[in-house]
Length: 422
Image (cartoon, rainbow, N blue to C red; front, side, top):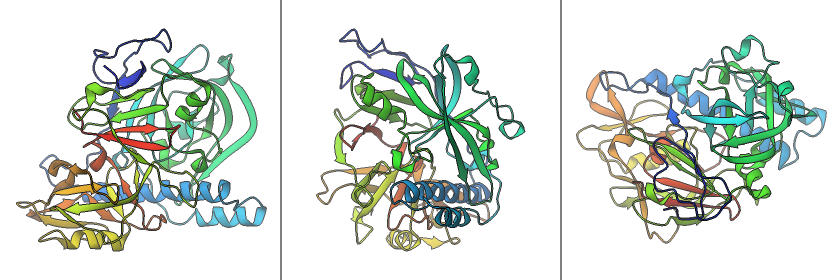
């Protein structure tokens, strides 16, 4: 049974155990949620260093974009031509071309328009815009399926153009529309979406037709609400939740409107209130959190930890990463981002999300170990890396952490629930 009233599940598997208790919303359905192969490990089990380095570049692009959106909307920067030019200048340093190998990509079916047309969409809890390739997009959208706004009776065009600048000097652009969007039966009417007329090489090669951000509007280039916030405001789901069970080795799912008890081995979730940035909600993030190594705290000052399904690694500011790794016996610096540890003696890594450490949430050795070094098979690369992303002291918890928990996002009460996955 579900922890809450009936809801709709985006999942691998069946709808067994999802029980209706009221005539609305519709009976739960299931659709596939899959992860694209990142190939961060080679076939022989050695680490793909080039793929890991590409991941760090992808993170730079993503969090630079989020930071610019936050500065523009929440802080008021860029609302005159001079500061806007400065903001765009900051966003256009460096050159690199990315592929899906450098991204953590979880995809599932999303239906857009009337009549509803299915698209394969990448879900990202670390960003906020819903961007989809449109019929106005030429070669930059490749073979992606296009959103045909002229064929949807519920599509409404706005006068706004949304342009996203990336630090590699490229950009994506599109017109802001509203339309009906449905995920496995849960519907948001007049959901804002960017109908892309051009896609940056930074995102064009991601193996999906579009990207659906699920974070707060302060990170949105369009400054609009993401899907579940729209659903909550319209009351079209039983409860204001979306939940995720990400699994590299088995069924993965997203649930909209409920918490699926069948995916929890620990009963109801343990709730944590969200932290803000100067009073503004931005990311799904814990406050006063810290890593632990071998049952001892590994960070002297607890700080915010962002959960991000669009990131593979666990990312810390360089000084915090160095402090973490100083607690790992036998650790050694590999390069400016990565550390190694003895493969034969991996550390026990956990995270605590409050000053009162009632529970710690573990990272499995399989998740923590990114593979051995081809030049020295006795040394393995760890999933905690150091990188300055302009987030102050905050950490990012990507798939290396998220595949070890069941996560519930409560959009109404601004909190995160965690459970041990089944």
